[in-house]
Amino acid sequence: MKYMATYDLMETARNTNEWLGATARAMASYPAFALSMNPLLQVTAAWGEVTERTFGRMVAKPDWGIRSIVGPDGQDHLVDVVPVVQRPFGDLVQFSVRRRAPMARKIMVVAPMSGHYATLLRSTVASLLPDADVYVTDWHNARDIPVSAGKFDVEDYTLYLVDFMRALGPEVNVIAVCQPVPLTLAATAYLAGEDPSAQPRSLTLIGGPVDPDAADTEVTDFGRRVTMGQLEQWAIQRVGFKYKGAGRLVYPGLLQLQSFISMNAERHSKAFSDQIMRVARGEASDHDAHNRFYDEYLAVMDMTAEFYLSTVERIFKNREIARNEFVVAGKKVDFGAITQVAVKIVEGANDDISAPGQCLAALDLLTNLPDSKKAAHLEPGAGHYGIFAGKSWRLNIRPLVLNFIDANSGAPKKSATPIKLATSQASA
Image 1: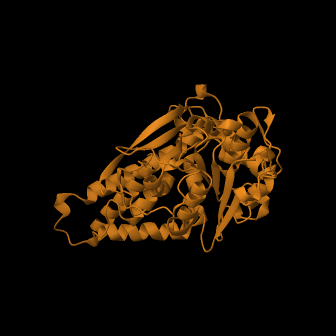
Image 2 (image 1 turned 30 degrees about the vertical axis):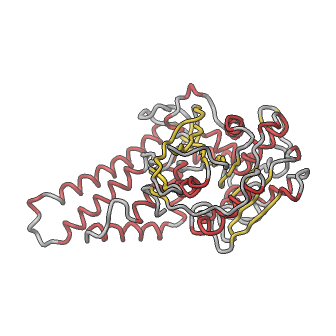
Image 3 (image 1 turned 120 degrees about the vertical axis):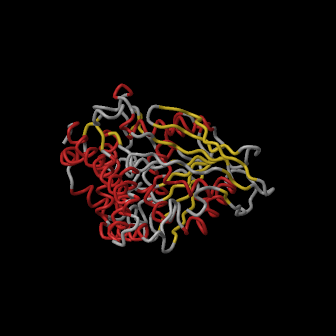
């Protein structure tokens, strides 16, 4: 399947469906039909509106939508997204709060590169902003990166994190969510061996596959069943002529989205049919619950083929992180070199992506880190999304993480005070 024609065929199908939706919406909305009592016209227009939006969102990068926060003085503080380090495959960006002095807490959030944009962590970032200076890894869509920029695999990803940590200095506290957890741990160990003074103060690792074999999930089962040859044949394509990355081998976002939806096809089908009827009855809005969720969920990005394949082979199949045999730029990374960085593990009891035990395995690798600098929390009843962006995060995990950061950074040891957010995503 490593052909441009296959990639372009998927894009053609997406574009055609977007056009069909726009056409149906426009035709069914003609003023001449306004006097008709046929409800089919309203349903057709509603189907067109939902279809056009659905397929259009698949190739659009969502906006962060964090416009301002309300400070303790009751005044609005505008928020700017400012690049701090810019690289071909991803940037480190700061959510700069105007008219606010630097905060005692400096947090770098490592976003996943697993099909969705970093904006998937919008509510996570928004919840941290009132209490910290927040930086986020903003990964780029591989389809937009020219082939001349070179490769990007798990080692390159790790070295990007190393450079980002160096740029922020040793006072930074790192929070890694899901996919980047093992590589963030590797980047910290790399610094411990090569540049100890640049290590972060603390690591909070949330629901990531440090040892995929610690607990079985559908993800780990799939990784065991499929061979690397099969995976390369089924999943990898070349970017078509429409984008700057034409010719680059990628795991296409549209193909990933197909896999996401197929896991809960009945649930998604009902959600869209219900939304069509809400639109037909005039009960929907541009930012209702359905659109807020699916505008983000449907926005997918291509991953470089080498990153996806090396993740499966080295992290899941060979378990190089779990066996302390990971190599970066020809140098073996020794997790035993981490002796000063406080590490907290957060898992969800109902996480079916990175099941309990997979992330906790990180503490066993830290053989020379004192127990006083190790912590773990298992959130009852929480699924994968809930531990970093849902109710469990907002009510329980966020305060625990901030208190852990304070306890290991010399910052004031007090619970974070909830501050009302004034953002377009405040209800997320």
